Length: 305
Image (cartoon, rainbow, N blue to C red; front, side):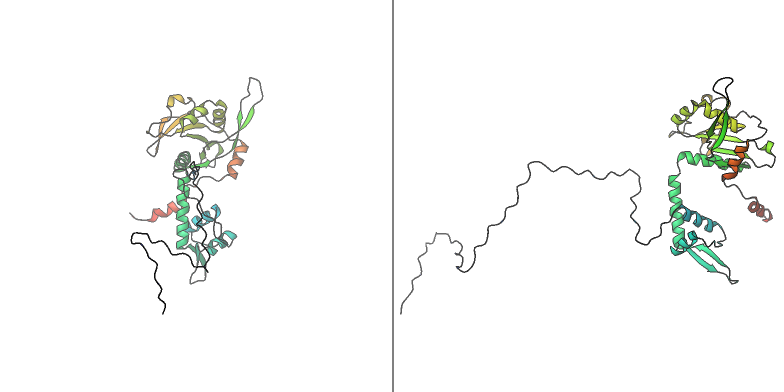
């Protein structure tokens, strides 16, 4: 019997890994990552967003209805009325979007009313409208409402043809297009009693000074109305943007203070026997500011205190 002697191993010698088996391939060396660049990569600027701006609106899903101002106006009209249907395309869109509901009375009459989703859509529209209303537009709206409360018929954003004197003495008269912020007349059937009044609204001092350097614009307003008023807003500190002495003496001055219109100086009244036919045509084609409904106010007479 043959005996095999084990190899002699020193006690202090290190023990390394066993040699690879002869039937297995040698593993490849690990891949080294590329060296880091010597300089830092360029910084990426974050997207610029205007402070206070609403978040971007995502694209509507496929097949969704695009509702615009016409749909929002129809929602307001139905909300304020008895809800009689019109049967047009706008109404079909609102019904398909689930913003309107059809109701049938016991007599078989069909009416419309806003659903819960329609009330929410109307509320969101009002929020957007209030946010879009600037200081100038808000003051114009206030002046127009004050004219309607005084029993007058008011218009906003008209384009009226006005007559100006010639550039030199003896020259032919000139014509221009005037765009007063508010134009109003009395609610009367007698042409001589119309008493047209022009209101020019200013909420910025730079805009006011620029306007005062345009005598032709002021002359056009005086040609259109028996009275011309400048309505001055206030700055961030509550001070008027101008003084009455800065306004030409032929114009009146109103100052908007704490939600009220205060007369700083009365306007010079000039009697106008009649308004030009072109002005009457422009008023006929424009939509006046909604005033108080006399028929609805008359219903309050029968209510006992």
